[in-house]
Length: 260
Image (cartoon, rainbow, N blue to C red; front, top):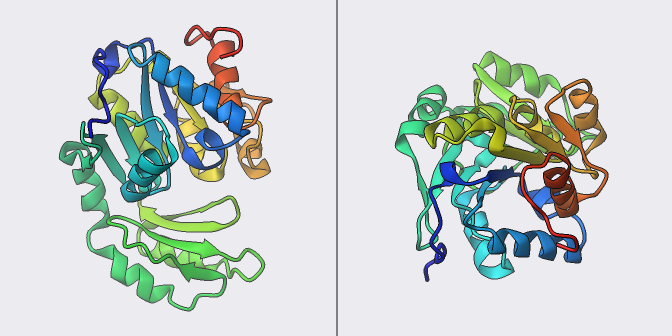
């Protein structure tokens, strides 16, 4: 199966590039709104590039595209920014070594050490997926002991809580924002043509990275509080996919026919 079947210019030459979170953003909103956005992307592949910027891992992304009919991205910033990869024509996600080496160097072999120090920590349940450069937990906010934050900081790494449900341990200085900027620079995409879209705190570094951005209408209150006063962020009224379409039109990034 060829997932990038239609001929299209290189991504840097297109009118705009959507760099979007998945859960709550690209996957958010009504069925009808998602269908409109996905159809619009497919009809405008020659002028619209697509990058997924997500906490999800490549296996999940490929599954969603194959089984749920999502438009295939051309690049992926996954695993909360610790994966930077290209999507091959056959649908496999290939990490880009030139962009990931610094991430690998910052992380080293920290995974087992992090897991050992946080084993049994109140409010944290280790996620079963074996990530390469992160350790991730489901978070029980009511039972969480915040001393986990200092444990992670003392190891020289960063912690991130998002949607009050997830606790991620990441290499110091690595998250969605720095990684999408690295990829945009690597691909020579003009920054004003990029639209970053998100809805939770793990999108914060991407939305305030200086690239044009939208916080969709269903964004978590903690994210909106952090975004106050950031001039490059558009606050959509519509939720999820419809909020992305709203921002594209409001920021005049691409033509959107009425009813699209």
